[in-house]
Image (cartoon, rainbow, N blue to C red):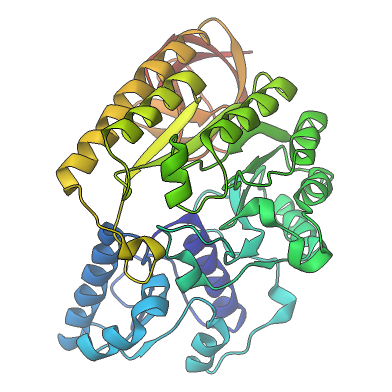
Length: 422
């Protein structure tokens, strides 16, 4: 459950279980499984509720004799283990986010070091998430991730290169680099921010056509990353950089270590180096300290910056975070209204930017076939969260996992319609 980081953890566990000769599958539809492992999310209220509902569903199945054991791992389990053990005693064992060896022990299985870097993917093999580090050292007021994931730990470059080579050999064409804070990469291992060197080394791996960077923290952003992105053709001209707000006073309350002016300066510098870059960001509506004035500052910020991609979350009042001691004055409805307003502003920006793409041809990676269309993405779009390219399946044939040259003939706010060029 939850984010792409959790998905990677599930894939690693699946690989280790299978490597120990245990028949395991991801979200199996068959009814002959006797042990369920639920990898939970504990990030915000909705995600927590979904995880709890799933645990209760399988506990109920256990009580009906449909399964033998239910194990729970992941972020919710890390954060609320004691409470969960009291409230749902029918669960056979709870594990934290770094308890993989302990889970394997339950199956009398060993952690196989020779499998490091190998992963059974739970989706189409043409793209794969690559977790370059674990945990986070940032003090953001609203965020519970350090409580669940612990401090920042980078994975060695050699290990990541080996993983990329293994994936390329198994048909992966796109690597999506993920972390809680990707721009912090290397500080613990190499005593410097080393993300640029990592990306450069991964770009050397034969068979990897696209490398995409996610979750880049803006404060102290290493500009050598943008230089590598500019120099290496197989690094996507795409940057996911969560800015969280557009008001300096709220950014200060959020403990982000930056200002609106510095954020705007950073975006301008990045666009100056790579004018065609697609910048994705996320913002939080309704954080404590966000009055009408501060919210309007964020709206103005979005209108001025014209981000190519934008997601908006409503503030979630999380216990044990720094912001929990502040008064959460807005109702959920008010927060949602603000988020909706921001997305309406973004829809117009996205529509205008997409109209400029009509008549242009792009390299498109085909992800799936759905509803009479082959659905793909340009290098400016990440999987599941960004714009999609729709190609009429009654007129053109595309293979999932292949690249095609696609010419855009129409566009909406979030979709491009294209024909395939021979």
